[in-house]
Length: 92
Figure (cartoon, rainbow, N blue to C red):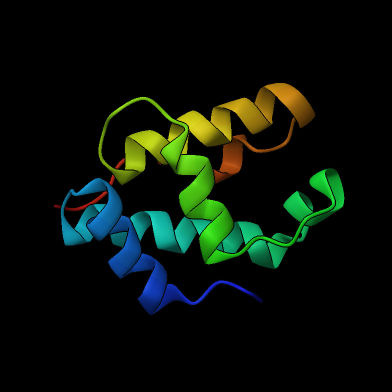
């Protein structure tokens, strides 16, 4: 796995703001996505902290979960099978 959860959580807050809970839920989903191998199989790239931050940077303004869901939605449209990685709710 090429996701460093602690570092990703800090980078998400530094780059996009939001709460600790918001960044943590995105990190959990990113780890699950990396562990699944689905992104690497579909896109041919390893999921890393840098890649996650770069992709979320393309999203419209918002805290990390909104940006994450925007990216996951685009992957769902392009490849299918990404809906399970979306964020439905998180604790504040």
